[in-house]
Amino acid sequence: MQKGNISVQTENIFPIIKQFLYSDQEIFLRELISNAVDATNKLRTLSSKGEFKGEIGDTTIEIILDKENKTLTIRDKGIGMTEEEVQKYLNQVAFSSAAEFLEKYKDEANIIGHFGLGFYSAFMVAERVEAVTKSYQDGSTGVTWTCEGDPSYTIDGNDKTERGTDVVLHISSDSEEYLEDSRIEELLKKYCRFLPVSIKFGTKTESITEGEGDEAETKEIEVDNIINNTDPIWRKQPTELEDEDYRSFYNELYPFSPAPMFWIHLNIDYPFNLTGVLYFPKLANSFEVQKNKIQLYSNQVYVTDDVKEIVPEFLTLLHGVIDSPDIPLNVSRSYLQADQNVKKITGYITRKVADKLNELFKKDRKDYESKWGDLGVFVKYGMISEEKFNDKAEKFALLTNTEGEFSTIAEYKEKIKDTQTDKHDKIIHLYTNNPVDHDSAIQACKNRGYDVLVLDHVIDNHFLQHLEQKQGDTTFVRVDSDTVDNLVQKDETTESVLSEDEQNKVKERFEKVTEKGGGTIVMKAMSPEDPPVMVTKPEFMRRMKEMQAMQGMSMDAFPDMFNVVVNTNHPLLANKLLKMRSEEKKENLVQYLYDLALLNQNMLKGADLTAFVNRSLDFLK
Image (cartoon, rainbow, N blue to C red; front, side, top):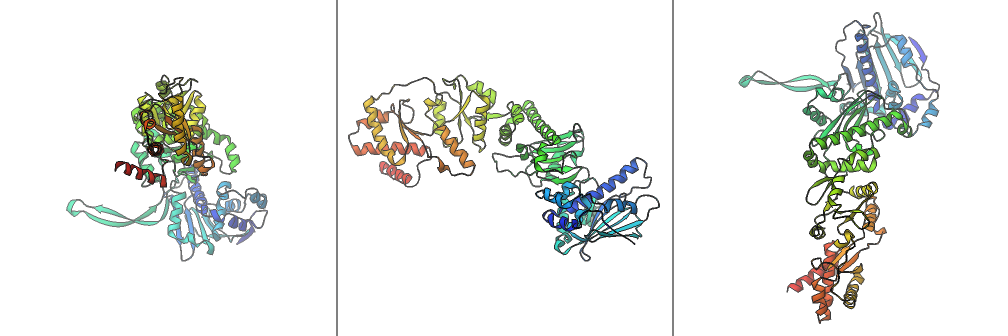
């Protein structure tokens, strides 16, 4: 028997590994199985080069759980190790100073996965680890390396006859969850489901049918429980795949999810290596979308589903897989953002997504328009957050009006510029975020030949401001922000049928009823067909309040400013109010018209609404 000490400069490396990484200890299985895959692939490489002339045979990696003996074994049939290689690979941990290292990177997650400690992650869950191995080389003998979580180890010979390595973990008492079949299967499906070597975890029962017709007989048989797909579609060429292959893979990734709209197959080997498939899910009009749906792999080894450092923020709404060996996994967040490969990968993915959307738009615009309800959130989010995407997306971003008609940004400006350009040469984009509540205002706009957009998503507040900034000659005004005559702000004036003295009398009456309800009285000569009284809200103030609400702040920080616009040309004022003799009836009419205007803006609530209903009933009686 040979004894020795593992080559590390600090005696406390094992307790540091165990204690510091406790919350991420589950990655030990990924690391050990990845090592087993590496050993298997090395054997395949040697065989292809003629340096190994034996039979490769079955290379399935086995995961063996022994609850009685409290062991978990990872068994491979790869190249194995000689005693010399055991000394070289298992007894030298590449740490110059573990204490300084951990202090420097104390905020890192998954530090072992990031820094390649690999085999030694076993000591996060095991009190003793054995590596029972035999090299593929002719004449080699079996070797068993044993370590109990401190720098001391032993090396013995064994009578192993088959090449490969068994890593046997004697699970410690505080990690006995890893002796449960369900926990191990969960980790295998999370970290190993697409590894390139078959991984077996026990057996499972399958039903087979023998014979045909009346003589058919169904039997249940035990088969190996292979938990991984060794040849996922992102490793294939797009020309090898049908649409159904992509849909099946999506269902494999996200069972029970609605089918995706379409997808992008990523495949590039210069100036970096990257493969993958990104899917466009159906977002509908929702923004509360679960992100962390893109899975990052490195050579088919699962790394993380937190890809915000690699994928631009708006692309995290996508689903799918990215696989790249060139993404640095051993650096801090700030360094990762500055890494040139990451910047190139981010730019490549953004460009591919933009090109795909542009291609779909040009190829079949009607089909693209039919998907806009799902795509709109994604495209708008991208335009707001990513400059390069914005420049491309202006060609295929769509605006929708109240008639359900679609236009690109440029097409819509051309459509409305003659009728909706104000005296400052600003093209006024009228919009509603609630077509039902704003119906009367929308109809008033249509009666004057104006077009009204529907911008009813939570992101549209940001989007319209983004367009105002980018377009320069564009302004967005909500249909209830002002009277229709003022929306486009032409130099057009309408004469009032009321004299100045009559207008003052009407204004005084409205000022009395608004003392309690609020609002600033504005006397305005409009069309007799327009409402007698309207409530309008300043566009800039409403936007500020809505922005506050989106950020979780109270909307009470700004006062609820609004105007009560009295139409001095309406017959109810010119022909009825001023001719009434009863002061009570005059007050009632003014109150009623004011309440109607508030009701039209959903601003009449509580006791005021109850009083309005009661007055209406009295009127009917």
